[in-house]
Length: 206
Image (cartoon, rainbow, N blue to C red):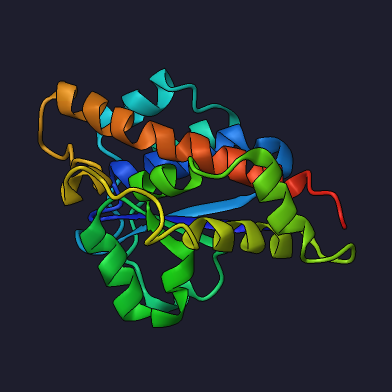
C-alpha cells in the first residue's frame, strides 16, 4: 500500500481537504492518505467551510465521513518516516518537513510545485520510470520511482512566475471566496498526483 501525507499549518482546512480528495479519487487503489499540521491546536475539527467545500468537491464514502470526524494533529518526525509522497501547502511547510526529516527532501513538494514539475512528464515517461524498477517491484517501489522522476525536474522545469505561486493560500478565518480560491489553487496538483499514481500503477516491466 502506498502512502501519501498532506501538510498545512493547523490541519483543519487545506491538508485534510487535500487528503480526502485524494482518498476519494484513488479509492480503487486503496491508498493510505493522511494529513498533519505544523502548528495549531491538536484535536481540532475541520472548519465548517472546509467541510462544506469537501462535500461540494465530491468527497464521498469513507472520506466524506472523515470530514466530520477529522481532528487535527501535529506533524512529527515519526509521521515523515513512511509516506512515499509528501505534499505541503506552502514553501514554509515544505521547509519545515525537510528540517524535521532531511532525507525526505526528494519526496516532498508543495502541491502547486508538484503540478508544475509533473506537468512536464508524459504518462509514458512516468510509466517508463516506474517500469525501470523491474518486474518484481511492487506498487510502492514503482510509485517512489515515479516521484523521483518528478523531483528530477527541479532545476530543469521553468520556475514559477513568482515564488509564492508555489503556495496555496490559507483560507482560515477568511471569506468563503478565499476557501474557493484555496481549493482552486490546489486542484491542478491533486490532479497531477492522481495521474502520476495511476501511471506508476499501470507500469509495464522492461
